Image (cartoon, rainbow, N blue to C red; front, top):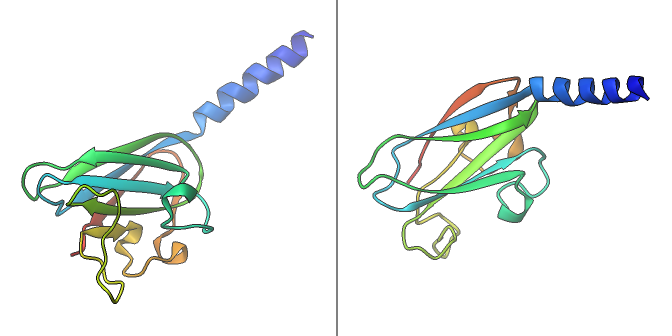
Amino acid sequence: MKTVALVTLLLLTTSRLFAGTLTVTITDTGKGSELYIALYNKPDGFTSPAAGYRGKIVKTPGKRNTLDVTFGDLPDGIYAVALFEDGNGNGKLDKNLLGIPLEGYGFSNNATSPGFENAKFPIHGDTKITIKVRR
């Protein structure tokens, strides 16, 4: 019984030791809008908010600026980030008739297209990435 408790405690402690923090520095944020940020740990559903592993909504500063957003307690693995600015408060990325975004958006690796393969990066412990908002 003591052995089982010791092994369980060791596994729980060890798994916490390998958990990392992701700091996403977002540059060229909009003026006082909400920023929707989603962290994905698999390609299925990339850019779909419902498929995200973790997500945050943060207010941007009142002027174009740089903003840091942190996701903690992440196991090592492959991840990707997608984000968009909601300038009009409707909770979605508005697009024109051709599907081109009308609001700011961005992906990890500053990928120019919304594919997980283009945006993926490894997390091993504490990791920092930068995403420039595209317009």
